[in-house]
Length: 388
Length: 171
Ligand SMILES: [Zn+2]
Image (tube, rainbow over all chains, first blue to last red):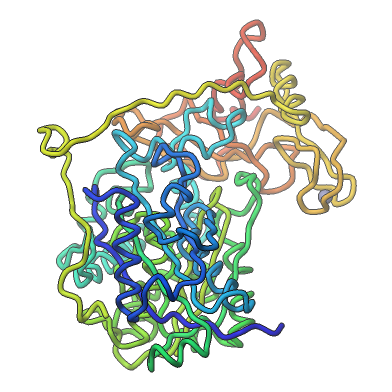
């Protein structure tokens, strides 16, 4: 394939909060404005806009992408919204990447936004509509069921203990204490706190879950010749991958996300990565629930099946470990405004690889990182690999 | 860059800001009404449930037996026209003890949703349903269960024609 090199050259984000006073458009603008300022560009430099936002049902606005377009700077420009549920935040930069890699555009603005707080009283109820209207919804399902059912199957298949899974939540929330935009950073949280938190849907307890949030993140992507002009610290998008499993989620292996494996293999091949456990220096797997980070690390081939918790037990996943996992603080700590949360992981890799992550900086001048998200009807994996 | 930035945008509000009217807001309810036709395969599935039968479908190419039935095999992308009555027994693939309802209300007695692999379907092929007539701490993965049906005259061709699955008393 003949594709052009594409770099991330700028990034911006808002705080992630439970309820933002700003509207969805205003959050989009704040992040976009900051991303442009970070690389000293204006809207005149932007040739196309890619926007990611998750279910319209949160906002109660049909065609929410178009509704947000003025905040995202899409006026009189080619504009496209992508939506693959929770996977959106890592899919929208892939969309921006092929806009530029293809040669169609030289500079693209990528914006991801979520305002979950408008759905009243709790965004959780909006998820009812992801279940099949005839075969599932009459049982009055709730979104927690999906995670609880998958977590239980995952734990039982490999004999994983809840206290080991709780380590994920502890580490991510502790990491988030160093993130200036974080909603649930806590430097002192312990495994006991997680294990003693309210049981929502066993085995899922309150601190196993990321918080509903409002927020936005934006990136500027550029082709090589523009990149050289605007920065001496480009971070290149080296590999991308995405893959979908069956929508009949009760007809598949819940203990192992094969679709994440396929997405990762696509991205590794493009990036020329043969031994991901050695060549990936920072991993930002999708962590809406603590066990999901483990599940995904295994799908990403960064741990053997059933063994990802050991990375946390042994300190490998710590910020100063051999392969730091979610040094940002992840969704569990920074917050989970769905599409924005995924793109936050890409922004984190951008800052980490440039050595600009401040208190969160991973030591040893990391060269390569991977971000992954998951979503749709519990069935999509999206992966981006970045390097410098 | 995060290292150089002192103040990030975004203004947090609390629930109290709404309750006490510190901010202006617009409250509205959206109401949607739908009548979903059941289609071909799920139509057959629901009609069978009314007769007290769990129906699957078989792919003649890869021989997979799926439940609920569908008209196309995802693996082969070939038509699935063979409907097969399955058992109304199965094995718990996974379950949860859930203490919150779909709209986040707390409940004392847990609901017990489960994925149940149905006897007669291919391995790992199950449906989501509820467990009942069981002491929650005794539920386990691998537990054998059987459907508890509504009385025949009350069935209406819906997944709720099965009230729940209960532990199977093997003879
Ligand atoms: Zn087939």
